[in-house]
Length: 166
Figure 1 (cartoon, rainbow, N blue to C red):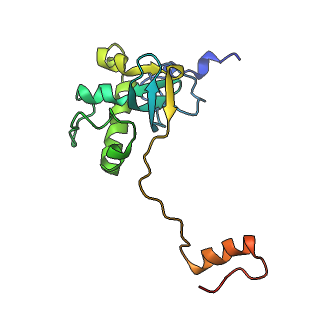
Figure 2 (cartoon, rainbow, N blue to C red):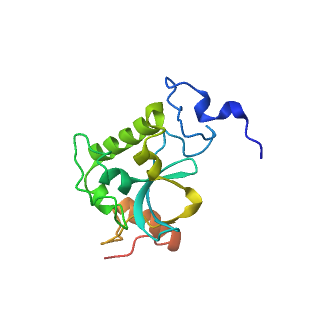
């Protein structure tokens, strides 16, 4: 499939929020303004790490953390992203999640970082990373949250008598 050169992220200037020196088609579901978090294992060295993604590139967050590239108001301890789950990172809260996304956006939006050795080292092609379940579920409880919820679900299984006596 041919991609129209005019739809490339680096055809904009830095005043456009979709601009990235990391070239990708702006119709891609993972542009620079959609930075998800995940966990994967690098197929080349078998190391697991937490990642973010821009188009078909994975950004190894462990590399950036070790070099203190993600520090700002919150300073990482060096062991947040070299994990097999996002649990430790998730426990830090929304303010830290926003901090990391902003740092990533700044690095991949601003042309001054396109030759930065640490940033380039953190980039891995998507096809070299085997993505795995990003969280460890420690406890799970399945319960009805309300009488309405119980009635609606009961109607699926017992349309004539959705609520059974407790």
